[in-house]
Image (cartoon, rainbow, N blue to C red; front, side):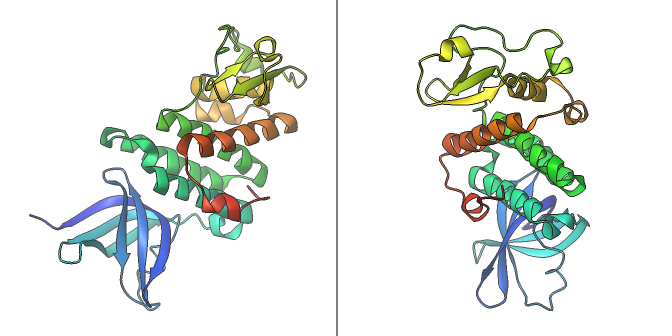
Length: 264
């Protein structure tokens, strides 16, 4: 049995064990999320390569005696330096990494390529984006991640009366209707139109523009969605809803959300 293997890999996190060694969490399109040990102190040439948010090709050895995987080499091809130089981007990338580690994408083996593309695409987008675009990009990532987990609510129609939220070409016109609110009902795991939401309690408001934007994420290409304008009130309501959904649907307490409070 061949104990050595190689794979494309993204470094999700690094934590110290002992005096000089580290446990590295990786994401791979073939193996999903796995941990490997990086041996050696600060003089190790691998230390600078095997750093959070770097991606490239990794070589590993499955040590059956120690019941662990050892990193034998790593060739980083994408370094994404701004993710360590910008506070918001650092927090957003760290949260995405923790989300992947704690949920494993909720995917079966055949779906790992989707997880790989989504996470790397998000980190690449963060690297190239302005602060404002990075914040909106994070919301897009969270909505798509809910789909990957299989818990994304239907944003096309009211969960009670079935009224369609999106009419023909609405998503392309993308009118600003900040005064018209739709609502998310956690108990029904769905959205309600403003008529069906009347008198209901514990609902999360979302502007009609926000409903159109969420629908656009499923209907349009990423490049087309990035061109759609989003007003401040719409952004804030989507932000509050999507972070609430991620926490409630995964049932996970995220350390990076607590650490990034007021930033994310």
